[in-house]
Image (tube, rainbow, N blue to C red):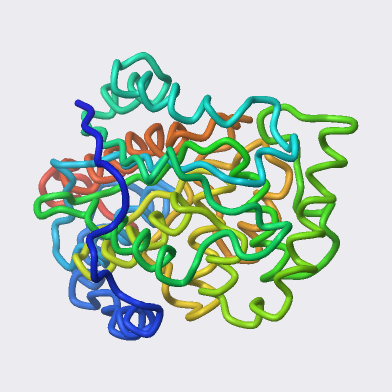
Length: 348
């Protein structure tokens, strides 16, 4: 199922101070749910730790849903779409109009994310963010005003509706890996080329233009880069800000988050830079083939669930990871205990 949102955030959305306040009010993991999960896990008819990361996933879902047993009957894939002014510099293999064309493909059911969402028994929502109004070219100044960035954050928060129990976040936006690379360079330093990758498949002069754009964006916006939210507005985009908003809203609503690739993880990195615990309720669904994604995951202390050399974006890797989460919960909730199965537990 696919629906589209339209335009920007509601008038009167939060400003940056209100966003910081929301981040400061984020709840902690539910220790009682974690204890109950560990207790049952220890009684299941298997050696301790035998299911590896599936056990970690189960505990993670319980901790952030705040209940035991954890369960996901309603999963959502939310794809945010926005256009970037920096695309005009030739940093992508595709023109900016492809963003809107791909949104229509999502709505028509023809994209990879449609197939993977259906297979995962999830719903798909596609949120358009002012596609007719790209961000400003960040090599000339901030991509977004503070007001527009805050509105995009607020719009993203609306994607976490009542009843959603797990949300996978993805994006569509020509040139958004350039924006993600610039955000990472601003947050973590190093050299621009360490964060810039092929994205849609650029090489040679186009890749050099991408590196140069990131360097220029850092130089012209330097006075804003001491604050992560201003990094987001100076170098990011509508869809990246909206994903940050969805991450905040999910935490407040008790909904675990699966991040997709490099761009969605960069959105999470902005929040992590404000509070290192702000994305504890997030897992990275897959390791993108975009080279800098591995380095970014290491910065965030996140180990992706899958590594399939995907680099499509559009939430495809996160949608695929929903099935891994469902598998973990099926084992935890459905397996017999030693007592139920009349199997002897470990010898004393």
